[in-house]
Length: 263
Image (cartoon, rainbow, N blue to C red):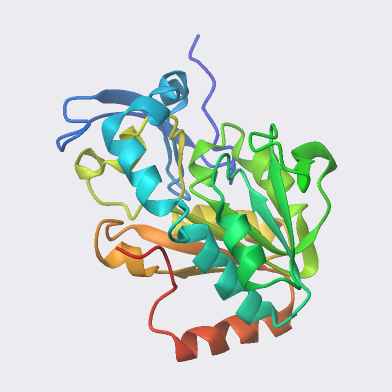
């Protein structure tokens, strides 16, 4: 008896089993099996979750994390994502949720630069022992929600995205940072081989997810995508209101690229 057809968790389309071997450093010769949706293109690599601890200790990924996170001397990517979100929503007393930021301290830079803004750290655990921490299950909605390098770790893509979208006020904006699969040869991509990266989203899969949850979605290239971020690095921007659709268009009518950490 044949096994039942595997279905995409995002769109319900038929999945095919895939196997890819990385051809580029630092994951050269790493082989992974997974599933690719024939309809929306969404790729998942469940077996890559077991190597997640290597993200923290691995030299390459550890260096990239250091470069994008805040230090005592300079802000990091989430600070610039927050600035963009604040300019788009146009609220001087906006609330900002940093989703899954771990030990990153960009929220402190935001609070110093914008004292009228309230910040919240939302995560599985309070790694910074912060007073403004909210566990995911009990987190309250915000005007601006940031998820930098998070959505590629979603083992349950729809359910975990729903937890993220619950943090978004009806007139708020969600800004995610991740690489987007463009359909080119995956063996030349580093991103899906990084330990812990189990979800490789496509534009169509994110449009489908946004539509199913009453959102618009926009894709923009951050400045870092022009250099070390690579051609598939995107900000994925979700919002529900038509006003924010136009405010986002206005922002990018004035800015060539989305802001990100400085080189």
